[in-house]
Image (cartoon, rainbow, N blue to C red; front, top):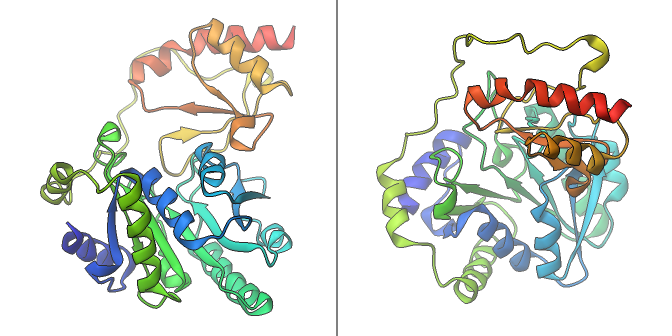
Length: 314
């Protein structure tokens, strides 16, 4: 499995990653829990752009470290100035997620390269290495954009990934982490993560490691579907939700029509439309919606959205 991943990572990142610097994990969540404990001491911080995946706060709690959210720009892309202001001597890592859950944003090569340069300057200024951790389970689910290589942007990087989304195996919990061979203390990082992994879960499921090897190259089809016959989904301007089109992943983060995102999500729940309030992702005033459902479900939700919008504005 690790040899297969080494070939895959070389293709994706154009950098040779030896199998010894790859570790199989129980999904991307397992990999993140392993690497945060391997890299960080209790009381240290990792910075992550907000909005961010809701699980990050829990991972920070389990590792006895702090999550420091950094605001993003209006398109949910990196605000490098905001990140630089938040970095301190306590910062051990910056954790990015692109394609992003919950926003669907995909960071550009220019953004990632600039972030790498920023982390190099900050590491020199504070006299300690700040690592970049890239959480990439949606890497192969993108729409007419490319996901740039974080390994090419900054050598002191750990990539975390999962087969859950690209193979639709979310419940099988199989993922991995890979350490850049030029990262400071690369071998020690992998060894520490492996020790954490062995104490938490012993090892990643061997059966699904074999499945993942045989499934290499397979993935979900992200090509556009032909327009479906059905009602016009457009709404009058005064009833529209503001949303940035997702460039990757399976999720989007529209802006709520009212300030109270919990109230609005409850109004949608009354219409049997299940979404998540944005405040759980560090984004109050927004809500997260998944479009990983049959197209008929999306079309069928139109009237429920209209009624919820009307209730919210009454």
